[in-house]
Length: 447
Image 1 (tube, rainbow, N blue to C red):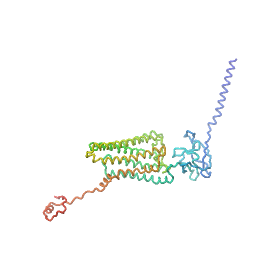
Image 2: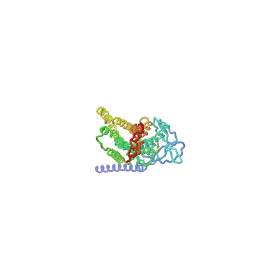
Image 3: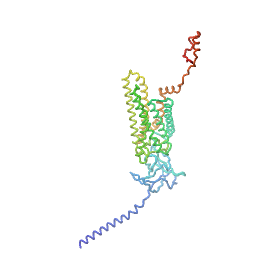
Image 4: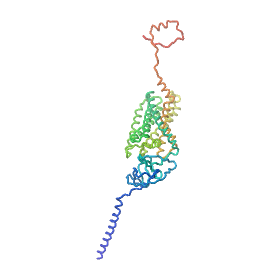
């Protein structure tokens, strides 16, 4: 009897607990099936004339943003947007806005940060809603200075592009260069010219960005390979200043300039989830065009590590060239071959060093600007945009190349004196009236 009572008691307790759990499940299930719309507070610019907005809301919290889009309810507020120091309000269309987050912040398409609700407002218009966003202005630049840079930066890029292609044309078609060192400069000029063409396109259009970015990625790597070959070839020329070892090195150089960029772009496209090239966004200047191409930038070491490796090889090659020049000055001070070529070697070393310096400044500025502001961008952007002008000044307008160009352009076939018959020559020498002042130039017999 006691045992039966105990069993009944346990059964009642079990049924009671099970009933409670069932009630809890029944009460919570309707709540889970209905998701409450997110409340988004939007500040309007001016009068409250907007009811809807075509911008999605992303389920998010303080630490994560989910890619799932959910419904939202607009809470429209009329207030003035006061931008913090260093920011100015700039207008953008709805297409430039990715979406809203949990605290009514904006995700702006072309800037890797959340824009808080007190730093933007929305203005309704016939063509669509316009967002006025507090956009960060570089500390060293005013709006007037930015407008001046736009008027200088793109034209300088175009001039540099012309200078690069012009240098290649002069070296290849006018000077008809034969030695490998000058051919390396031709390859470098062509690669940099194409690189600047795609750099201009990336900052002026926003279609086909992945294709343009991939081509830019390949040609900037190709130009770095050519620059490394240019510096390394100087080592070979100094070691072989007597001209004993005549090795055709150009095929090796051109193979490296083609294969290295192809391998890098394949790796970049394979390891990037969306198949986008690893082009740093700091190559593109925000003040040029707001609707320019932008890239994910998730794997920037894929760009900076290989370029840093090539730049390091170039610097080491130049350092070794400097060392060999000093050593040969002591060892071969009485050698005719060295005395004949040492001035040219010193000039080539200075030229490659200046070229490497401008390129290094460009890459260092791009790498630092990916994470922080570096110095006055006006100065660095102007320097980077005029690289082609520096190249043509160093390699074309120097005294050695100017002399070669002048000789190539002014080279004319010497006019031969007319032929003279044998009997006329005999009569000439028989004539006693020929004076000493008469022309004694050689004559050509027409026998």
